[in-house]
Length: 171
Image 1 (cartoon, rainbow, N blue to C red):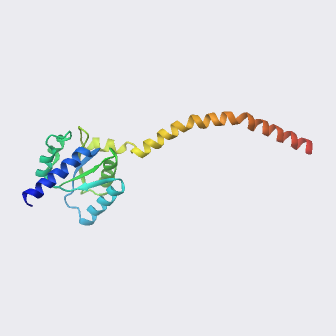
Image 2 (image 1 turned 90 degrees about the vertical axis):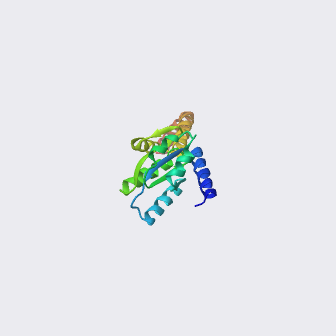
């Protein structure tokens, strides 16, 4: 890899560190190509990505970034899992680590906050952006539904009483 290619990789990594909601660092020593492709597919489905980069280049890209604390984790065979959604990459990485003992989460960063492996698990347990939007929408819709039910209840009660009286007269 010549100098120009290295500079391009450092620039790409810098953009990843700057724009990602969460970055998870893990060891992947001993994983097969098929297992790595499976991880990439799961991450892609969740809206994230997986990147293997030279530790030295990643450390250079981390200089001046809010998540510069990741530099301490970059030793050995490391892989970076990242996503714009602050939860997606952590969820996929945590779930994958449970099924594959060769994938070991070292830590990560969420913005300028450093995460240890327990922190990554805590972030993975949080609801995703879509789940939060659904919860907020249901909270906003519940009062309107209750009001509509309250407004319609007297009319429904009167209709029930009238149908009961009608049935009695017919009998």
